Image (tube, rainbow, N blue to C red):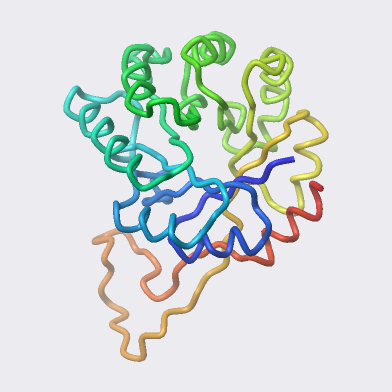
Length: 244
């Protein structure tokens, strides 16, 4: 079994490695589903950990229909982040009709120049999971991250199991979204996946003594300003113990 940690910082990457995870997906903007992290974050993460380090390439939150400018931005991100010695990339793109955008994906894969590539949860927004699976295999992706086209992997176990059967070891199927210590064993047993994905975070209290409680950096959206979610090495160890 392989455990991949969705990390939101260098500190989370370090905790993932300390906890025994085999691989990291490094993201910014996790509340939006993950966006491309900065060059600086990737550089310091690569210096800090020796386990697998995959980088999400996603220019914004929202849908997975990208403009020509956004595609060029993604290609440039892949090119520059390759120079840091990362192990792979995570991306995906869809057409307006909910099909895998083969042309965009081909260009992104070409930019990765042989690095392992994961098709992320854009898969869960595709119209036809079976057809999307075949398209992704044809393109040459190494794995698919999916919740089975449902809000959580536990709710999507039947579709994830179908994907594992249909894939027939042609591609890895990785279950993710809502995975935790209370359900990971059930998800693995019901689906047959050999890879699972999660963040396993705990809140880290701010060290700020002065706090302005009436201002939110999210504007009208109230967000927690004085607590930061960070991957918890102990939670990672707990998951490793369950799935090993």
